[in-house]
Image (cartoon, rainbow, N blue to C red):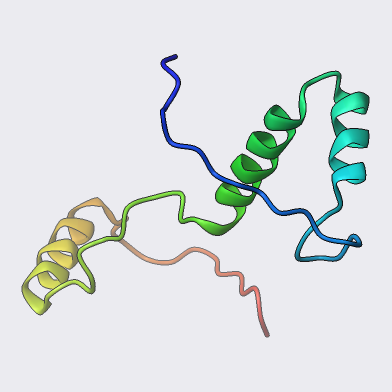
Length: 92
């Protein structure tokens, strides 16, 4: 993995909150995980990214009427035919 030339200055908070932590907290996490402070910050940002950013690319939006009709025609070919022998309902 090639290191980037880009740097980022991190200013720590004076106390731990939901929006930031102190340098003491970062040092404690690094010690607990046996990694350096930079790695702690990368791990935290990676977890935050997976929580915030979408896991998949956005789709093309709603289906057109033509696409819905094509899907219904295809589904009809695969649905069972004949008399219903029994029926269960989830919500009565």
